[in-house]
Amino acid sequence: MKRFQKIWKSNSVNTKGHWAIGTKWTVEGSKGNLYNIEMLDKGFQCDCPAFKKCKHIGYIEGLFD
Image 1 (tube, rainbow, N blue to C red):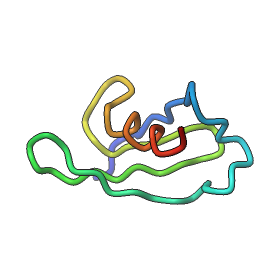
Image 2 (cartoon, one colour; image 1 turned 90 degrees about the horizontal axis):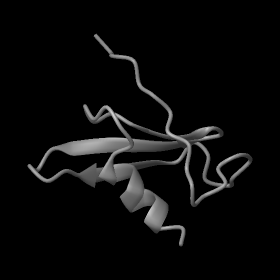
Image 3 (tube, rainbow, N blue to C red; image 1 turned 90 degrees about the vertical axis):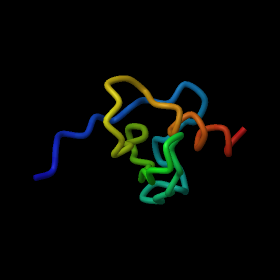
Image 4 (cartoon, one colour; image 1 turned 45 degrees about the horizontal axis):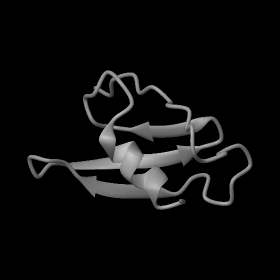
């Protein structure tokens, strides 16, 4: 069963109309788990269990700095 996934707005990347929309990245978590991050028109989505904007999204945002 897939749980609800929140979209987190980026403070550093303007994702609206961005060329990388639909791109998915796999990031390794601190315990070795792999998480999938996707750029959407409204922000980023990560499949980790965090209840706030996670460090996995922060890592991907850093790639665009």
